[in-house]
Image 1 (cartoon, helix red, strand yellow):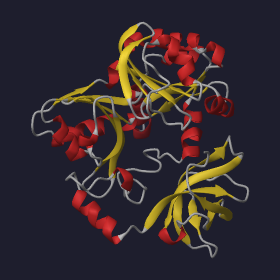
Image 2: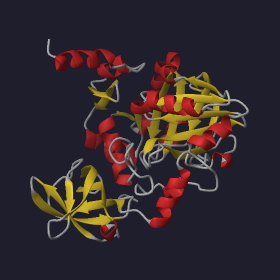
Image 3: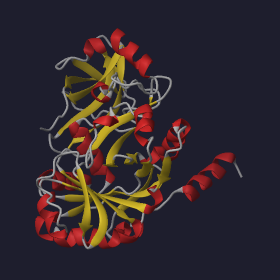
Image 4: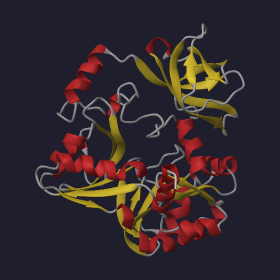
Length: 373
């Protein structure tokens, strides 16, 4: 048997299911391999699902994401070492976005930190990086911080859209509407105790993320849809998740940022806190002082064409000035948009650039994200 056939069989065998993978198939979802899991990419169609989240409420099963618990007297010290942000600014019930810098100027992952209490932190990482992140954090855990990987025991539902609070309120005593962005509470939800409800999301449409144990996943999912029926609630796949996040200009690990990407070039200086020492902080500080050669920008297509990952970006004379990292047809704007790295001379809002599509330069213009207000 050829080696590539052996590898393909091995990869298929290694793909995981979430607690509700079979349920999504019964709902008619198109299932695809993604980040090592079988995931629903769409149900009724990407444009319809996108519009549902922008105007009403939709539910994503994003249980492929990874979850770690760090606990102990030195938990904060460990997080301060591996996180770009200042974790000491967190208080109980507060969430923080950051990235994990590597030792060579790139990004191990971007992630969320939840402070449960002074010595207990809950981390949410990207599905494709669960093992990599665990090994990286473990490498710096020299003070015996208790670490627990609960990724395989945890389900995560993102209930997103302007009607999310109304649709969910009957399921919990937690007051949802007043919850501030990037805060969370634990409580009873859909009759299940100790559910973590977080005012976070990846769509820009508002809403909540619900963390439950796998054994309660079906019960909570069904309760959400029963409670949200009169609000037009629908299941939403990863296809619409991508178009929604791109309209907001949110980075996707593996596309817009990765192990070889400068976080400063990626526009992540706002979560890079040089008030403390962290992995590679001295080199990043020096990079900030001398300036970056390229910057991640948003752009809108002026002429007809859809930008795709790794398409070249050129100037009016045809000289390469960068590359596309993400691109799509925006369901809201009815035009093509994208993210990409360009030489800093072309990074200013309004700069004219060209996307090389089938060796033809297609006009675009740099626009500051978010594309949809």
